[in-house]
Amino acid sequence: MTKKTIRIIIAAVLAVLLVVVLRLSLKPPVEEQGGPRIVMGTFARVIAVAADSKTAENCIKAAFEQLATVENLMSAYKEDSELTRINNQAHLAPVKVSAPTFEVLQRSVEFSRLTDGAFDVTIGPLVDLWRAAHEANSPPNDWQLRQARDKVGYDKLILDADNLSVKFTVEGMRLDLGGIAKGWAIDRAIKTMQEKGARGGMVDVGGDIRCFGLPPKGKKHWLIGLQDPHEAKDALTVGKPLLVLKLSDAAVATSGGYRRFALIEGKKYSHIIDRKTGTAADSLSSASIITDSATKADALATAVTVLGPQKGLQLIEKIPKTEAILISPPPKYKLTNTTGANTYITQTHR
Ligand code: AMP
Ligand code: MG
Image (cartoon, rainbow, N blue to C red):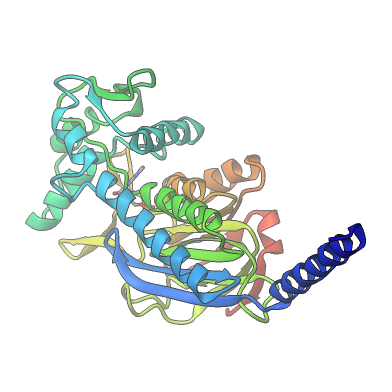
């Protein structure tokens, strides 16, 4: 073969490759949806935007697998979860845990410090006390509240990073990851989708949402409806959204007592508890946080519900690239937000 022939062959191969690459890049991406499925006691949905259906479906499958893995490690309701093992044994001796659980606990303590204990992963004894009160239809008395409060406090938790172990310094302590595990699971699911080749995606676990990259066809952004606490009657009847957010690479999490509460002697008690008083946080109907990670959004939404509108907004205004949208309790349902939140709000329905 002459040099000229070789050059012609190389040029032809390159031309064919160029055509293939161009065709692939011009082919519009496809969008696939997964769910809703029940995850962490709520409904989860995943959307993947990818070059082809197979990639999108793989991404959705991997995302749901991640959600299930986190649930299996961190559920307080599963007898065989790592969290249950910690809760049963950590007052006796340090309990070794997996790297993900350890990391969530470290992040939890970070958020406890940042929010001065408004978010506290050791809230378990108070959650249990109020759950028992719900079952008995009788609120706890002062003595019971004091007893439970003495067992709560992130300063009573020892995290040993060298040995990945967890130790309680007080008997009867219990961890509760209900305020952060959803966000953490969403972040893990998003990372997996990116690694598996999704060009865009969204993971929604019970209204805590993160999205990235290419939005669905014909859209410039991911459009996320925020529930109106006034309209929402239960987990399935959500009513029309209060407002629609336009997000690109961001997470939004909403906390509040408007949907999950305990009815005791005819009075509603939110499932979010202020460890300082030992009782349900009731100064906000809902708190939504928009930021770059779902873990952060989740933990801060829970914390702001405890802090209330004034202190909550003050805190969020100080945290870079983080915004809050708050709704006061009935009958007012007054909406307030950080100044930066306006850039995300597209439509309001009231
Ligand atoms: P979220 O819906 O993310 O606000 O989480 C609420 C859940 O977090 C509750 O059902 C409890 O399991 C747990 N929780 C309640 N109060 C607190 C608190 N002050 N700090 C951290 N977690 C909490
Ligand atoms: Mg939360």
